[in-house]
Image 1 (cartoon, rainbow, N blue to C red):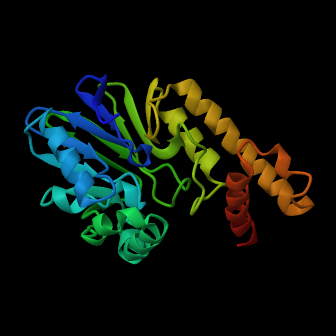
Image 2: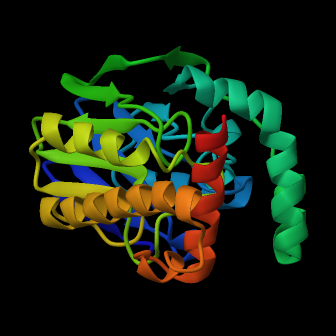
Image 3: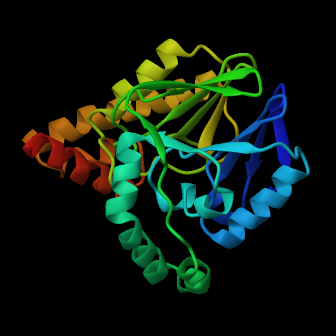
Length: 263
């Protein structure tokens, strides 16, 4: 961990012990793209030092979605452009301080690190698709729909055959459902897989995976959504044991699915 892995031509992934978090780096001619900025200014400074071992070029930043571990380091990358979905910027403005307080309560060891964070939302936003020229390389940003959050971005590097899926795909742990949209997530992942045939898929957390892994996780999400609909009608007692995830994860997914079904 904490070492760069080249997963395509001048496309790198750095996996961190902190939250098993992945950061991406796409290097072009005289410019680079940084995908997510970690959990604090301290972690962002570590990331910047690691980037500078690869390239001295100026950067553009993308936040894959509005969860603290993906954007709390943004301030250290300014004055660069920071890209995100429109709802990503909105939710950071609305809930950034709440996220900080929640994490400090659950992780008192990080309190000092988190207290110094300046919360900076993306200043360049889009709703469906955007293209970035990264030193002569086109990188595509796509929002396929609701899933792990309301604002997940998939980052596609077509000339390298690499897809950064953010937390739409998880390795090493079950998908996280805290503010998710379980009934939409399967279709969102299916749309990503249908449009992007690449074999190299970088999840937001955990090891780099292949297309077969992402397809298998899509099948799990599809089963979870169907079982949640069934549980909404029949009750949980006989259905909970059929879910593909541990009970605590399944109950969180069910609670979120029920909110959708009751809306």
